[in-house]
Figure 1 (cartoon, helix red, strand yellow):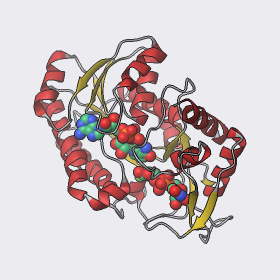
Figure 2: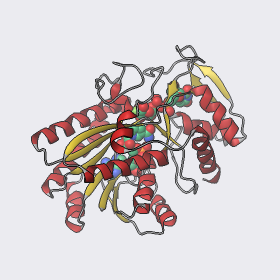
Figure 3: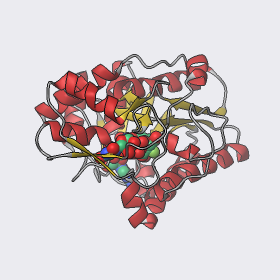
Figure 4: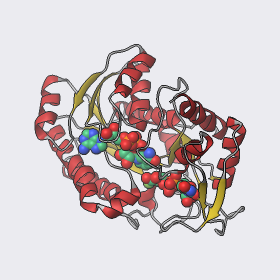
Length: 333
Ligand code: NAD
Ligand code: UFG
């Protein structure tokens, strides 16, 4: 198939492009490089030995979208393009609603116009908010989200449900990611946050590489075995493979709107993650215990049964490989 990958130069998008090309699909990438580097494209080509067709542009730009759909026979769209910093979204909510929500609307309008109605969308476990407790399953309520970034994901999910309700000719899969970490084992692709990282894994690896002096663990007084928060970390290559499974299912079955969690189903605390990283890297992680971070939930992990049963998706890689691959990427870049 020929897949349009928006945000294909980003962290998850680039790993998914590698898996798509490896599985024999053709891809067209649309990215404006607002949070990625152009050389990611040549790295994807180097890993796969295949050429990538790239459009540099914005998903909100109707002209670029029409050009892409006119010049390419697109069978499905995997839509990663979006802004993802929780703290930035609190400061600039309009930027987030414009880029993520208006961007998705513009993309869907172009898809409708060119009769391309297969869409896989990058959502987040954040949509579950604090209404229920882990393990989160796809039938649980969503929307009680505490920041604008999370609300963009919730609103987009609702918009996609309305699009499908109005026209059941669409085939839409919403994937709710838990916490992607790790890197490609070639060390050519990985996460490259701009400035000081918000997320734990790039923070740990930059402390290990002595780029940052000290990690602050946000709270050790939660109701968890060691007092620190628990998350469901998933290797980015496993996550990428989840998209292939979703694509296969989408093409094998009829139209519909389906929602799946992509996680491992197993949670690790912040202290367990630090210790796994120290073991994998042989580096000591300098850390101190600090105050809780506003908005953090104590325990987040996925119920993976639906993705396992309906997509045949099961994460393969454990925490050791997630840490080893992150460290190799950090050392080599
Ligand atoms: P990323 O920032 O590495 O990748 C996003 C890519 O989209 C970047 O290459 C960026 O340049 C591009 N982009 C952003 N806005 C664009 C626009 N308007 N037009 C064209 N290109 C644009 O992020 P990622 O970690 O790869 O995340 C991919 C998707 O998954 C995002 O939608 C994100 O919200 C979602 N997600 C990520 C996580 C996570 O922890 N990484 C968790 C849940 C959901
Ligand atoms: N943490 C620290 N110190 C840090 C950074 C994080 O102790 O410097 C802790 C957090 O308190 C949390 C855990 O590490 O307990 C994980 O934090 P991240 O910021 O890495 O990830 P979150 O679970 O907060 O959020 C991530 C993405 C969101 C996405 C969500 C989905 O950042 O975009 O996963 O579950 F919505």
